Length: 327
Image 1 (cartoon, rainbow, N blue to C red):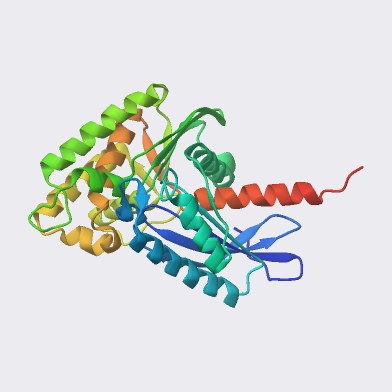
Image 2: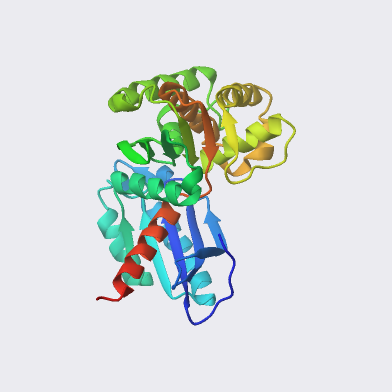
């Protein structure tokens, strides 16, 4: 992204993505004449809303914690100040029986309208973000994979055209809740639980048969993917990762084995590399490696851009079309 100084022709936008594992706010400065933008600041809360979904509804405790996070983010946005505050929720709130009531109370208390986007729209925004980010450098064929806390979006593309798009209702935190029963008081799954997670994911992938053995390059979005890349880097003596880092097929399989072995050794590496994802990292990596293996991709690239940036690109495009002169 290109740097530029703020002028009267720029707009400051706060985007809040309410996910099942984390809630993140990015504040962007947008140049209205060109549509170029840069990230001014980024804030994150590892709220883990999926943990507060009980019998298909968000608990009062979960609602209270979400309200508190949004209030704090709104205060940060107002301090900029931001021209607009935009909030949306993905698998964290969609499908819950009381989501409308929760969002109504947030609207009444904070004045924030939260849009719940469905899985297909989330996947399409992910794909737009990848296309915009990688441009002409994007592979001709491959799969965009966005694993969050409560859902996983898959977009198979060929010659820059979407071949298949879907959203599966499992993510790293949801898998933890469903399969991990507590391993001697630690937050990590046993090998048997990892095997059950892998078996479950393989079964669910039968629902997306067009993507099995699809091949090409995978573009990975989300915290699980970034944590997997950081673990891969650490295993090879590196310190961190960069946007666009590549992981080979052999590497992500090695990362899965290493994380499961690390659990048996008090999880020293996991605690060092991904301390904020202790309960979700192993289920997420097991699931992600199964998806990568079953879809037959040759390598995977990490993308720091995802649904937030896709939403922003869409908003910028609509705004510029609305302002275009008529002849």
